[in-house]
View 1 (spheres, rainbow, N blue to C red):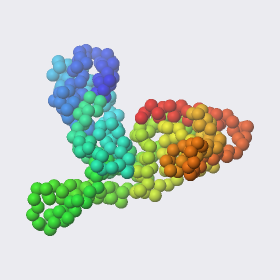
View 2: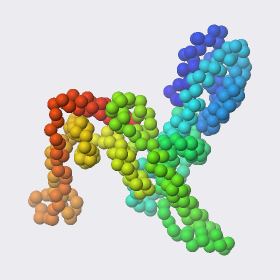
View 3: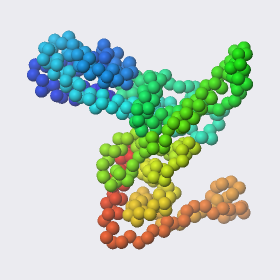
View 4: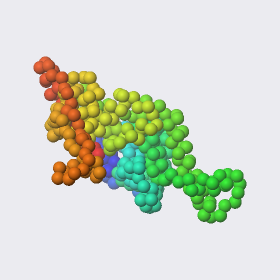
Amino acid sequence: MNMLSSYVFNVSSQIKNIPNSTVSRAQIFELIAAFLGEKSHAALKTTSLNKSIELARHDMQAAFIRCQERAISFNQTTKVAQQLSKLISDQLAPLLEKSSVLINQQALYYLTRSGSEWINVDDDYDEDDLEEDILQTLESFPYKGFDVDVQTLYISLQQASKGGDKESKLLEFLWILDDLYGVPYDETGKDWYENSLNGKALDNQQQQLADKYCKMITKHQVLESFVTNTQLSDLATPNINQIIESKDFSLIDSICYHIPIDRMLDKLEPYWDLRHDFSNQWLKLSALQDPNRELISHLIERNENLIEQHSWARFANINGIDVTQDDHYAIDTNTGEIWDADHDAPIEICGFDGVKLQVLPHELESTVQTRTQIMLELSKKIQKLI
């Protein structure tokens, strides 16, 4: 069911409470389109939904009147048309009250599924290995039954970010990084660019190189400006402890829990001095998304809370990881592969020392057990999101 269909379903299920209403399901689509400022449902599907929402949000009275007039055109009485408009207004209220939620969902979808490079391309990628068509920016993409214009979405995301929405701010940063991946660093056109600034005439090839260099440095300037004007506290961050302690799993609606966050801190660290509490929450989320020995051992060793230490150890154990046992192995330093005793080669010992846990007092046993079960449930829910 796409986004609009869910609202139509909710409206149609409540129409029985409006005596003498005869509108059909198809006509409800048209009424919602009218409320959002479009002439038809077909037109709504091809326009910028974010713009339509902003239009309705900034003049709810006009939206109400548009919807009412459309209902009357469907042979509804004035009273029924008013009731239908009120019902549609009530159903759309959550969307209208905070349109940044929809903007963030669309931006996240674009960054992770519709052509973004930041999730999939390593920082040390070989520029020559990237095909030109891979780096082309999409002009639009489908999202839950709507066609979303990429440039319009980015402007909306910037506005939400400037308005103080922390999730929008984080997504704007990731979007800027995505743009940088799409323009590999290349100073070939630097001299031609400087010549063009000095008014010198360039031939077509020289102008193309100058334009490419200009595009590259402009995107780097955008990143520099963003970082200069953004504090770490302005960015959204997960709060794993809050979810575990409150058992409120609805908090995972935040975009933080929908991002494949492997190497997320590697992307943030070059630009901000990451606080312990900030990075720790992202590390905990990463461990819940993809339990692994190294990360869980790290979380236990940097944590002084006995209950949390034992909870992470049990969480790991249930996931087949015993962090209390040593895990050492030898590699062949010539090849980097596991050392074979049948071959004479220099070796290096790698792996992990087992984590040393203090004995858990008996009175804390039930607390640790409860916390571990919540972590396991949370982990399952988070893993379904990505």
